[in-house]
Length: 199
Ligand code: ATP
Ligand code: MG
View: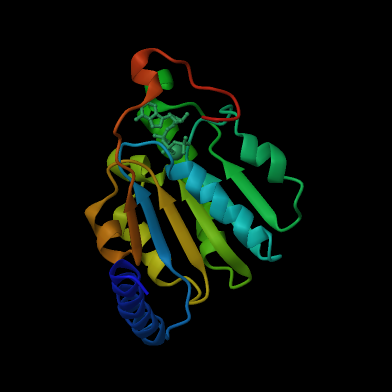
Protein backbone atom coordinates (compact mmCIF):
# COMPACT_ATOMS: atom_id res chain seq x y z
CA UNK A 1 0.00 0.00 0.00
CA UNK A 2 1.31 3.48 -0.88
CA UNK A 3 1.90 6.11 1.79
CA UNK A 4 -1.11 8.02 0.59
CA UNK A 5 -3.34 4.91 0.69
CA UNK A 6 -2.31 3.99 4.21
CA UNK A 7 -2.83 7.57 5.43
CA UNK A 8 -6.29 7.49 3.87
CA UNK A 9 -7.07 4.13 5.50
CA UNK A 10 -5.97 5.37 8.95
CA UNK A 11 -8.01 8.55 8.55
CA UNK A 12 -11.12 6.60 7.50
CA UNK A 13 -10.70 4.29 10.51
CA UNK A 14 -10.56 7.30 12.85
CA UNK A 15 -13.65 8.74 11.18
CA UNK A 16 -15.51 5.45 11.52
CA UNK A 17 -14.69 5.23 15.25
CA UNK A 18 -15.90 8.81 15.70
CA UNK A 19 -19.19 8.19 13.83
CA UNK A 20 -19.78 4.86 15.62
CA UNK A 21 -19.39 6.63 18.98
CA UNK A 22 -21.88 9.30 17.96
CA UNK A 23 -24.38 6.70 16.73
CA UNK A 24 -24.07 4.81 20.02
CA UNK A 25 -24.68 8.03 21.98
CA UNK A 26 -27.87 8.88 20.03
CA UNK A 27 -30.18 6.61 22.00
CA UNK A 28 -33.27 8.83 22.38
CA UNK A 29 -36.40 8.22 20.32
CA UNK A 30 -38.91 11.05 20.26
CA UNK A 31 -40.54 13.67 18.07
CA UNK A 32 -38.48 16.75 17.22
CA UNK A 33 -38.93 20.45 16.84
CA UNK A 34 -37.25 21.72 13.68
CA UNK A 35 -36.86 25.34 12.64
CA UNK A 36 -36.02 26.22 9.02
CA UNK A 37 -35.15 29.90 9.02
CA UNK A 38 -32.83 32.46 7.35
CA UNK A 39 -33.08 34.61 4.24
CA UNK A 40 -32.05 32.02 1.65
CA UNK A 41 -34.34 29.86 -0.45
CA UNK A 42 -35.37 26.37 0.65
CA UNK A 43 -37.20 26.64 3.99
CA UNK A 44 -40.64 25.63 2.74
CA UNK A 45 -39.26 23.27 0.08
CA UNK A 46 -37.40 21.33 2.78
CA UNK A 47 -40.52 21.16 4.94
CA UNK A 48 -42.56 19.68 2.06
CA UNK A 49 -39.75 17.22 1.41
CA UNK A 50 -40.10 16.01 4.98
CA UNK A 51 -43.91 15.85 4.59
CA UNK A 52 -43.38 13.57 1.58
CA UNK A 53 -40.95 11.48 3.59
CA UNK A 54 -43.45 10.96 6.42
CA UNK A 55 -46.35 10.25 4.04
CA UNK A 56 -44.10 7.69 2.35
CA UNK A 57 -44.25 5.63 5.55
CA UNK A 58 -48.01 6.06 5.88
CA UNK A 59 -47.85 8.57 8.74
CA UNK A 60 -50.54 11.18 9.32
CA UNK A 61 -49.35 14.71 8.52
CA UNK A 62 -50.84 18.18 9.08
CA UNK A 63 -49.68 21.32 7.26
CA UNK A 64 -50.83 24.82 8.21
CA UNK A 65 -49.84 27.57 5.79
CA UNK A 66 -49.84 30.98 7.43
CA UNK A 67 -49.89 32.68 4.04
CA UNK A 68 -52.24 34.12 1.47
CA UNK A 69 -54.86 31.53 0.53
CA UNK A 70 -54.57 31.86 -3.24
CA UNK A 71 -50.81 31.25 -3.30
CA UNK A 72 -50.22 28.23 -5.55
CA UNK A 73 -48.12 25.35 -4.31
CA UNK A 74 -47.02 22.38 -6.42
CA UNK A 75 -46.44 20.10 -3.46
CA UNK A 76 -49.96 20.75 -2.19
CA UNK A 77 -51.35 19.99 -5.69
CA UNK A 78 -49.43 16.73 -5.81
CA UNK A 79 -50.06 15.49 -2.26
CA UNK A 80 -53.52 16.80 -1.29
CA UNK A 81 -55.30 13.58 -2.36
CA UNK A 82 -53.33 11.57 0.18
CA UNK A 83 -55.87 10.66 2.90
CA UNK A 84 -53.10 10.95 5.52
CA UNK A 85 -52.48 14.62 4.70
CA UNK A 86 -54.48 17.58 5.94
CA UNK A 87 -53.61 21.04 4.64
CA UNK A 88 -55.11 24.21 6.09
CA UNK A 89 -54.46 27.58 4.47
CA UNK A 90 -55.08 31.01 5.93
CA UNK A 91 -58.12 32.55 4.29
CA UNK A 92 -57.31 36.21 3.76
CA UNK A 93 -54.56 38.02 1.90
CA UNK A 94 -51.23 39.17 3.18
CA UNK A 95 -51.00 42.20 5.37
CA UNK A 96 -49.47 44.53 2.76
CA UNK A 97 -52.37 43.74 0.43
CA UNK A 98 -55.23 44.21 2.83
CA UNK A 99 -53.58 46.62 5.30
CA UNK A 100 -56.19 45.39 7.74
CA UNK A 101 -54.59 44.34 10.99
CA UNK A 102 -57.80 43.27 12.66
CA UNK A 103 -58.92 41.04 9.75
CA UNK A 104 -55.43 39.52 9.45
CA UNK A 105 -55.35 38.73 13.15
CA UNK A 106 -58.75 37.03 12.93
CA UNK A 107 -57.64 34.98 9.89
CA UNK A 108 -54.46 33.97 11.68
CA UNK A 109 -56.25 32.96 14.89
CA UNK A 110 -58.76 30.91 12.87
CA UNK A 111 -56.07 28.70 11.30
CA UNK A 112 -54.13 28.63 14.56
CA UNK A 113 -57.10 26.71 15.99
CA UNK A 114 -56.48 24.03 13.34
CA UNK A 115 -52.82 24.06 14.28
CA UNK A 116 -53.70 23.59 17.97
CA UNK A 117 -55.95 20.66 17.08
CA UNK A 118 -53.15 18.99 15.10
CA UNK A 119 -50.62 19.70 17.87
CA UNK A 120 -52.92 17.92 20.35
CA UNK A 121 -53.51 14.85 18.17
CA UNK A 122 -51.28 11.87 19.09
CA UNK A 123 -52.09 10.27 15.70
CA UNK A 124 -50.46 13.15 13.83
CA UNK A 125 -46.81 12.26 13.29
CA UNK A 126 -45.71 15.52 11.68
CA UNK A 127 -47.08 19.07 11.80
CA UNK A 128 -45.71 21.85 9.56
CA UNK A 129 -46.33 25.46 10.59
CA UNK A 130 -45.30 27.16 7.36
CA UNK A 131 -44.41 30.87 7.61
CA UNK A 132 -45.69 31.07 11.20
CA UNK A 133 -42.68 33.20 12.17
CA UNK A 134 -44.33 36.26 10.55
CA UNK A 135 -47.50 35.81 12.60
CA UNK A 136 -45.40 36.17 15.75
CA UNK A 137 -43.41 39.05 14.29
CA UNK A 138 -46.55 41.00 13.31
CA UNK A 139 -48.10 40.29 16.70
CA UNK A 140 -51.07 38.32 15.31
CA UNK A 141 -50.15 35.35 17.48
CA UNK A 142 -48.86 35.26 21.02
CA UNK A 143 -45.53 33.47 21.53
CA UNK A 144 -46.64 32.09 24.90
CA UNK A 145 -49.64 30.42 23.30
CA UNK A 146 -47.47 28.87 20.60
CA UNK A 147 -44.88 27.70 23.13
CA UNK A 148 -47.58 26.09 25.27
CA UNK A 149 -49.01 24.15 22.32
CA UNK A 150 -45.51 23.01 21.28
CA UNK A 151 -44.51 21.99 24.81
CA UNK A 152 -47.72 20.03 25.43
CA UNK A 153 -47.74 18.20 22.09
CA UNK A 154 -47.57 14.38 22.03
CA UNK A 155 -43.98 13.21 22.62
CA UNK A 156 -43.85 11.26 19.34
CA UNK A 157 -44.92 14.23 17.24
CA UNK A 158 -42.47 16.23 15.13
CA UNK A 159 -43.08 19.89 14.26
CA UNK A 160 -41.41 21.95 11.54
CA UNK A 161 -41.54 25.73 11.73
CA UNK A 162 -40.55 27.77 8.68
CA UNK A 163 -40.02 31.46 8.00
CA UNK A 164 -37.47 34.22 8.29
CA UNK A 165 -36.57 35.91 11.58
CA UNK A 166 -37.69 33.05 13.82
CA UNK A 167 -38.51 34.15 17.38
CA UNK A 168 -35.49 33.52 19.63
CA UNK A 169 -37.63 31.48 22.04
CA UNK A 170 -38.54 29.11 19.19
CA UNK A 171 -34.87 28.81 18.27
CA UNK A 172 -34.09 28.14 21.93
CA UNK A 173 -36.67 25.35 22.14
CA UNK A 174 -35.85 23.65 18.84
CA UNK A 175 -33.91 20.39 18.53
CA UNK A 176 -32.70 21.17 15.02
CA UNK A 177 -32.28 24.67 13.64
CA UNK A 178 -31.24 25.28 10.05
CA UNK A 179 -30.47 28.71 8.73
CA UNK A 180 -30.75 28.95 4.95
CA UNK A 181 -28.11 31.44 3.98
CA UNK A 182 -28.70 33.52 0.89
CA UNK A 183 -25.60 33.61 -1.26
CA UNK A 184 -27.59 34.79 -4.28
CA UNK A 185 -31.24 34.77 -5.37
CA UNK A 186 -32.42 35.01 -8.98
CA UNK A 187 -35.28 37.30 -7.96
CA UNK A 188 -32.77 40.03 -7.16
CA UNK A 189 -31.55 39.83 -10.76
CA UNK A 190 -35.11 40.38 -11.97
CA UNK A 191 -36.10 36.75 -12.61
CA UNK A 192 -39.75 36.02 -11.80
CA UNK A 193 -40.73 33.32 -9.29
CA UNK A 194 -40.91 30.16 -11.39
CA UNK A 195 -43.77 27.67 -11.40
CA UNK A 196 -42.74 24.25 -10.14
CA UNK A 197 -39.48 25.68 -8.82
CA UNK A 198 -40.42 28.54 -6.49
CA UNK A 199 -44.02 27.52 -5.82
P1 ATP B 1 -39.06 28.04 -0.96
O1 ATP B 1 -40.58 28.05 -0.84
O2 ATP B 1 -38.62 28.21 -2.37
O3 ATP B 1 -38.42 26.91 -0.22
P2 ATP B 1 -38.50 29.72 1.29
O4 ATP B 1 -39.61 29.08 2.00
O5 ATP B 1 -37.12 29.48 1.79
O6 ATP B 1 -38.56 29.40 -0.25
P3 ATP B 1 -39.85 32.26 1.52
O7 ATP B 1 -39.32 33.48 2.16
O8 ATP B 1 -41.00 31.59 2.16
O9 ATP B 1 -38.62 31.29 1.27
O10 ATP B 1 -40.15 32.58 0.02
C1 ATP B 1 -41.37 32.67 -0.62
C2 ATP B 1 -41.12 32.82 -2.10
O11 ATP B 1 -40.02 33.68 -2.35
C3 ATP B 1 -40.76 31.54 -2.83
O12 ATP B 1 -41.23 31.63 -4.15
C4 ATP B 1 -39.26 31.51 -2.84
O13 ATP B 1 -38.70 30.76 -3.88
C5 ATP B 1 -38.94 32.98 -2.97
N1 ATP B 1 -37.69 33.31 -2.26
C6 ATP B 1 -37.05 32.57 -1.33
N2 ATP B 1 -35.93 33.16 -0.91
C7 ATP B 1 -35.86 34.33 -1.57
C8 ATP B 1 -34.91 35.42 -1.59
N3 ATP B 1 -33.82 35.40 -0.83
N4 ATP B 1 -35.17 36.47 -2.41
C9 ATP B 1 -36.26 36.48 -3.18
N5 ATP B 1 -37.20 35.50 -3.22
C10 ATP B 1 -36.99 34.43 -2.43
MG1 MG C 1 -41.40 29.67 2.70
